[in-house]
Length: 111
Length: 111
DNA sequence: CCAATACTCAAGTTCATGCTTAACTATTCA
DNA sequence: TGAATAGTTAAGCATGAACTTGAGTATTGG
Image 1 (spheres, rainbow over the protein chains, first blue to last red):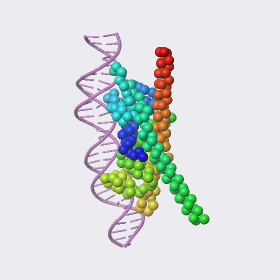
Image 2 (cartoon, chains in turn brown, green, cyan, purple; image 1 turned 30 degrees about the vertical axis):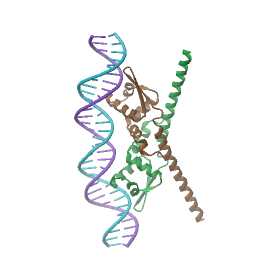
Image 3 (tube, rainbow over the protein chains, first blue to last red; image 1 turned 60 degrees about the horizontal axis):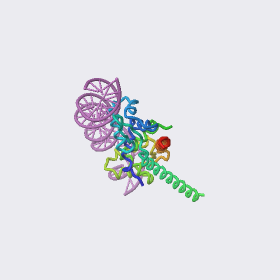
Image 4 (cartoon, rainbow over the protein chains, first blue to last red; image 1 turned 180 degrees about the vertical axis):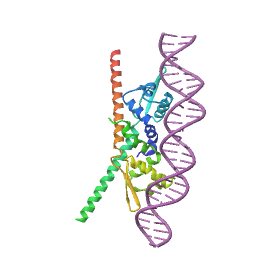
């Protein structure tokens, strides 16, 4: 069972609006740092810092060729997060099932 | 296609460690505000504020009976988030497939 | 009815994070 | 070689979010 400590960092990484939109952008394919920075009304340095956070969290990988750094999403990066959410969703479903079963039981007693 | 604006609030809601652990706890079943507060070295008020954030984000629902408020996870609360992540994961997979196909093509040319 | 419980709310403080500035390195190209 | 491009890094500022305090309401039990 995954718990919060397993996903905290990636969660905090994508929780920032700018970083969330960078992920959205990288979904459409790899991009350079300049390309990623272009849509934002931020300094270059700010965007670089965001990319560093995403890389440290294992969500983005990059490689530098010459003076150009190209970033892309790490395929396995979002996997633990997906798993954590899915685990919680199924547990809540099971809770609902148990509740329904309990209510049926009570109902049967009454009649 | 979901984009960041659709999930930003729920993402920011669960990105906080305390709130993440509250969600973890609620996974095991409904709990009162006092029960949720117990594990933390925080004031009651702080935990109440966290619960309010989770409720506002649609992740937690609660009802008050007498003086006791009982909280549980909203089954649909994490659904958009799960969908957003899944969309991104499949898009990255497709990128990898395209890359593999391209590399195979190049390979064929060389031989 | 009084005390204890369970929670609510408002106001003020503190601290982390995001942002900018500015100075720097490395690469490309004319 | 010199200028432009692409990115890196460090330092400091500033805003918002998390937290505390303190005072309040509503409910329960003896």
